[in-house]
Image (tube, rainbow, N blue to C red; front, side, top):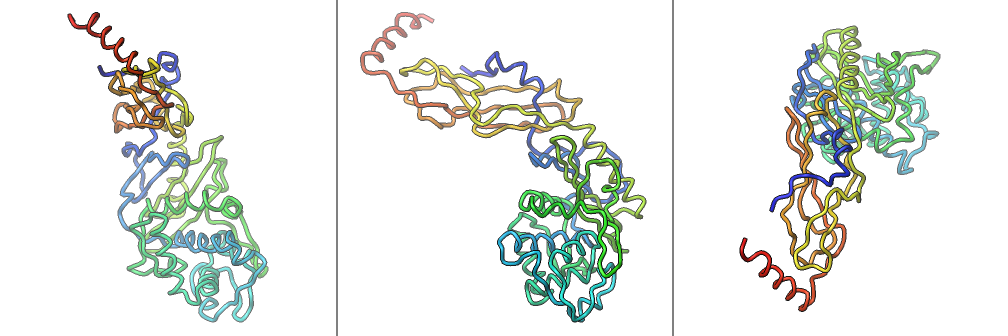
Length: 381
C-alpha cells in the first residue's frame, strides 16, 4: 500500500516548512535589466530577471581579482605584509584609481583595500602582474577559476572590468562568485564592508550605496561603464539570514541605490527560511515484511532548511512516500522512499528517505509462522 502522510507527531512542525530548491521568478517590477537574488544558506532562488543573459560586468570583475588574491593569502603563498611593484602600465591606467605611483612597491593589504573600497583599476593591474606576470595571463587564470566555481557563462579578458566585447558574465555567475567569496574566505571578506580608505593622502569612499543604510549590507562590489550601465553585487545579513543579490543595467547612481535597496527589502520581507529537519532525524516509519522487527524508521540524511514566500506556507503539503511493507532484510542507509514538499506556484521538491538501521529477516520458524498467519487471516480477503 502507499503511505502518504508523516508521523503524527511531526504534523505541527511540517505546517511551517518551505522549499529549498530554486523558486520561480516572482512578480516584482524593477528597472534593473539583469537581477538575481539568492538565499545564501540554501541557494534557493528568490527572484530572477534575465539572470543567465550575458552582460559586461564592469568593475564587478574585481571580485574575481580579489578572489584570486584571497586564495593566495589563504594558502600562504603571499601575505598581507608582502609588497608588489607598480608598473608603468598600471600607473597609466585610466578610470577609477587607487593612485599608485610608478616604480613604488605597494603592500598587499593596501592593494586589497585599493580594489575593494576604491575600485582601483591601477591596483587591479598591480595584483594581476604581481601574481601572474601579466594581466593577460592573470585573466586566463581568472576564467579558469570561474569554471571551477561553476561560472560557466563567464570569460575574463582583464583584471579590472575595462570594456572588452569578449569580457562577459551573467548575474547568476556573479552571484556564484559572491557566495564563493563569503564561504571560502571568512577571514578576509570583512574588507568588503569597509566604507572608506585613504592612500597617498587621498581618501575615497566605498561606492556600495547599501553600506550606508541600515540594511545589514556588508559587501560586495559596484560596477559601471557607459555601455553596461550601473550594477551592484551585494550581500546583506539580517539575524541568521543572508541574501546575495546581483542587479545590473541601471541608468544612474541614484537608480542603482534606489533599486537595489527596494529589491533587497522586498526579498527579506516576502521570503523566510524555516528549519524542517536536522540530518539524522526520523520522519516516518515503514512496516517491515518478514523481518525481525515490525517497523524501520526512515531518516533524512542532511539538514533540511527551507525557504519560501511567507504567504504560501499555510498551503504547504509535505508527504512521506514509500511502498510498504518493506521486505527484510533491510540494510541501514538503503533508500526506501522520499519526502515530497509541494506548494502553490512552486516546483515540487523531493528529499530521499533512508533506512535508519539494519533489519534482519526472520528465521525459518518465524517465516513459517508468518506465512501460516497470512493464510489463516488474509486468504479470504
